Length: 208
Image (cartoon, rainbow, N blue to C red; front, side, top):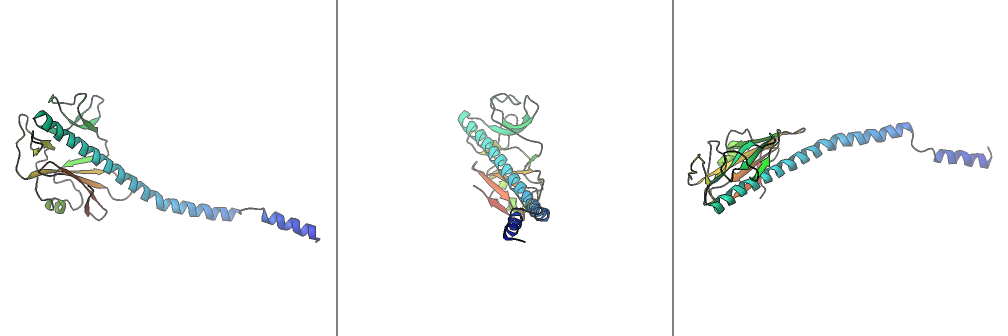
């Protein structure tokens, strides 16, 4: 074989690129990495989405409190139905007994579970409630605020306050991968709110 033929063979060998086996190995590695990372990504997205929902709920709670003080009356965050037929939490500003356009409201989805007080099934719920420095309402009453902006238990005509009592609202969201994520909205006796989240071991951490 002369020098020119040898050079042509070497050039063809250098420009052949990946073999089929090499491509299969690369694709296998990519698929394995994707299978490992996608569940973690989905869990992170679910946790973030739940936290945003909890922050929106806190915003609605604060709206009820501010309006109660401003209008010198009591207001309740209650579950109702929008004109579209969708479920939503709202504050009945005109006290019409149902949602009215203009009321502060928060639409809720079917995969979002909101539980008022004990019995939610949240991880380490009993220990978490026992760790609050106030009496947690256990009647399942929705968060309500008096004209002074303090938590109260609403009736159709009034909203009597129980000294040293507040609310805890547990919220969870269906998860595709991993454990069901949980958050807790804590409303202490002074009317201030806190956001708590539970990790995979059931440990609760305050977020604000």
